[in-house]
Structure formats: structure tokens, C-alpha cells
Length: 61
Image (cartoon, rainbow, N blue to C red; front, side, top):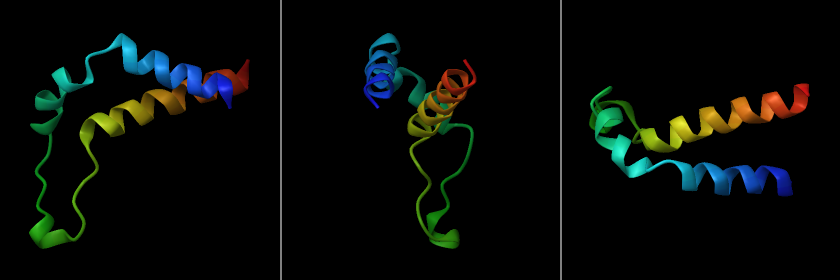
């Protein structure tokens, strides 16, 4: 678990996540009035995809 926490801290520090938010926000519409819950934050989703890929790489090594 410590190894995972270290990677999360590393990922937070190497990239300005707020800078890519406007780019990601333009990729989809958030029509919560029609379809229920609001979408997840797009920066969070990209962050989680990267972390999942890192975990897979760790488990395979």
C-alpha cells in the first residue's frame, strides 16, 4: 500500500492536472438534468486510468 501511496504522490507532483482540465471538459457534455448523476471529474478519470495501468505494471513485474 505504501508503494501505491508513493506513486499517487508522485503523479500529483509531476503534472499540472488543473491545466489539462479545460481540454478534457471539452470532450463531453454533462447533461445531468436528463441522465441522473453528474459525471466524474475528467481529471480524476485520467488520473485513475494512469494509476490502474501503473498497478497492472507493478503486478506483472
